[in-house]
Image 1: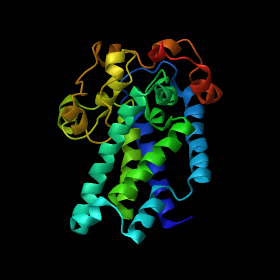
Image 2 (image 1 turned 60 degrees about the vertical axis):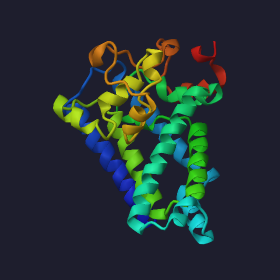
Image 3 (image 1 turned 90 degrees about the vertical axis):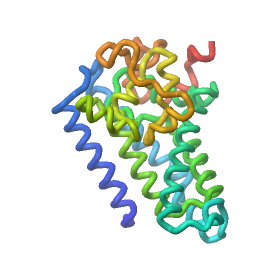
Length: 266
């Protein structure tokens, strides 16, 4: 195992444990299905990792190395310092992820994949890891394209991927933040209360708060909603068409994009 892999795995396990403990000590909401969702949600990330490793073994880091070796991309041509290039690259990648998220909601075929994430009837730290393998592959291809097009440095890719993974677990977590702290953090970053709105059963709320890291994109593009219509205690999580289905089962999640017709398509 490489040093990079050890760092990534350590950060992943560390954040998962911290957020899991925080959820137990200071939960925001009472979960409907609770921990019976965890085996499938965690199992999905194992499958995702294996599929990505087989189909795209080099990943975004490999793409960054190739771009650097061949001197391609927008950022190297701008003549920024190394530090500024890394900062700009991370911000650009975050914007790409925001736009990708909007696209996965807007395009019916992509929504069929992304609904696996939204079908979870609870939202907690494991929801941030719950994505269909085909969505993961498409997402990686988009990221690789962006990395090459902008000439993103290798270190920026590693930083961004670690931060994105950690933030996904943080802002999907069922944790209670002091309201004053939430108000301060959400000025720049996506908090659990901000992202919970995105998982509401109400379509207008589902189509809001797309950001994973920075909250500025939703504010800038007019997709920001401060609070859910029914409050955080009253918001229903999930998708209306799957409230009575076994959304906690791994086989159900894997088959969902191919056997179900979504309300967005009707």
